[in-house]
Length: 510
Picture 1 (cartoon, rainbow, N blue to C red):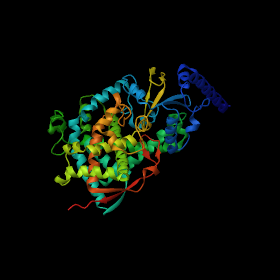
Picture 2 (cartoon, helix red, strand yellow):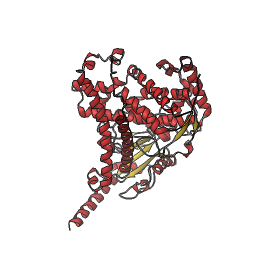
Picture 3 (tube, one colour):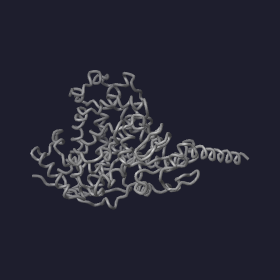
Picture 4 (tube, rainbow, N blue to C red):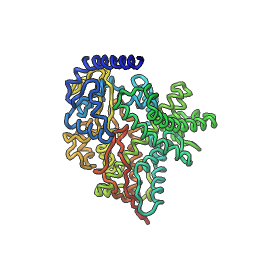
């Protein structure tokens, strides 16, 4: 009897939800947009219950078929996909539409409401609080660590012999995680325990990403239902345990250092970005985490807030950069002419200095920078971002009604033949100054744009330049796994579905 009652109540709730959400004004506006046929109650859910690799391909195909905008129904949740730069510019330049919802809510248990996931007033407050940590002068101070890690990464491969088949994702992510932890967090990953924790942390990121995609495409799985789904709950809790454990260890180690020194380093620092004394101490450099700990003493942020931001920046500061590095290496290995030209530029700058690198050296590497930009055009680390529209917004190609979720398909934007001739071709000269001036400014947005652009974009670019310059100076690159054979799976980031490898051949220098 009770079971019949529960089923009846659920049926009534489903019918009421369908009538309410699928017959209101928002639904009528959404339904006027092109898109694959939706069925009652489920919408387009049945079409997207496919493996992540096929799902990413399907979103790309729909983006081309229904160009420049199409709609989907995730049951009763309306989603609009846009890819035209005119529409993207209007949305991203709006100060009213900065909030995120669909695709991000399943990250809240991990990142809480840090800079990536926070909304409205809290986002503005945190952005203001964190901006000084990524001032250009501060970023340049971080580069000493990047140079050290670049040399270490090269030595690790060189120790394996004349020719080494490198598994790129573990190689790149180890390097970028070491850099973000030491530069922005002030904690060096040196022990065997640190390395094990780092591996567990990276595996947990992959797991929580796949869980987020799984649940996004199954919005009927509510949090309380996890009690009846033991395997999913176990996997979620295990991943969260490793993620929170890793960042908590970083915070505790840095806080203990300041407690042991009586917070003297923070007390003495006037935090002027132009003062070297603030970044180079006898034992430690001040880092982004130090600024947060200082703000904690001023009651501007609490321990939970620090955990949110450290979790956000350790993830975003290493995973996205590692993937961009991975694809850059693959592209340079396959495009020998570009690789030789980039190496010639690097050698001309570094050879007279026996390979020692500096900030001015990075600034001279114009062709290498174009290679990185072209890599991020073809393979943007964040292929899709979203916004929730809380009031009507008129775009060039459609009206976004209040309550709709908007997905910006950056991967498709970057390969739009209307703005990129021969879009599949790797051509670094697309980023010559005269070519950039000809293009729509919002047809290339690897770091997003507008109010919520990436706060660490300059740091990421300098980091990638340093790592790639070091690799090109010491190795020839030859392809093993080719990009034409690599499939991309839908994830928080643009992740290859399988491990990818490139051959590193050591350059003998007398």
